[in-house]
Every structure is written in structure tokens, then in C-alpha cells.
Length: 171
Figure 1 (cartoon, rainbow, N blue to C red):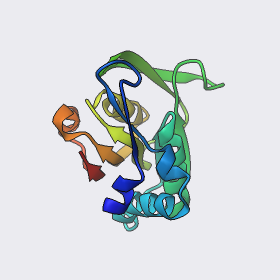
Figure 2: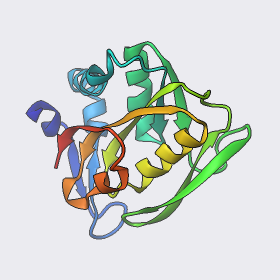
Figure 3: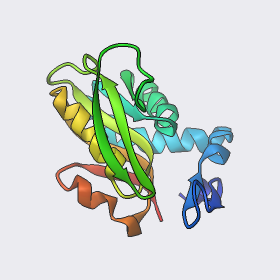
Figure 4: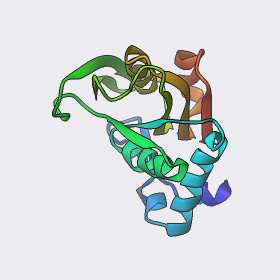
């Protein structure tokens, strides 16, 4: 996984002072790195009978859609408020640098569908917990959450104790 680590740019003080941002755009532009990242996210779920991959705005769209394609399943976006055209449900949460909300179409997941949530980074866990809540409110069967990067010191897993959490890289 050192190959992946070497392709991720670290940007200090973004989006605000004191935050170290792990920029995956440098990884995404690299053909071999992008393929390795998607393969690494998808492989643990290849035999789990996933029905849908949910990707969280915005880098989760990129990784999640690619993982869905790799697994041969559908993709559902979770977006910031006001971005989806049909009737939505909303979940608010705390970030390490503020508060935010996420929305998903009410009809995005059918009861009992087996769902994998994919995002780029697990930090404090607020975004992932909100996404998990949205999946459950649609009565989806949440198989797990897969992240390219986990920032271990921020203890995001503690908000996801009952979830199956997988991270390709841990910092």
C-alpha cells in the first residue's frame, strides 16, 4: 500500500487552519494508482452479494461509482442538501471543522437491499454515521463501510461501532 500512499498529496491548513487534508486527486489521475485503489476497496466485498454501493459527495462519488462498476452493482449518491431532484431524506452531523447535512432520495434503496457505503476518508465519523443512518432509514441492509483512508487518531470508528468498517490506508 506504500504505492497508494506515495500518490496522495498532503495539503496543510485546508479547508481551514490546523486541518491536514489528504488530497486524492493526485492518486485519481494515476492510472495504476486509481485501479489499485478501486480494486483494494472492492475486493473485500466481491463475494458479499452487494446490491448497491452508496457514495458520499464528492470524492465518494468517484470511488463509489468505480467500486459499484467493479462489483457489477448499482450506485446511489448521497449529496449535500438541495442537490437531488426528487423527494429526499436528510441527516445532519458534526464534522471535525463544523456541521453539515446529507440527503438521499427516499426511494434510492429498497427494503432489504444489501448496501456498501464507500467514501475517501474516515475522520471523526460524522459523515459516515449520517450516511449509515440514511441507509437504515430506507431499510437497507448495511453490509459495511469502505474507506480509502482512515485517520485513526480522530477515532471515527467509535461512531460506527456496530458497523463493519474497512480502510485501505491508515494514517
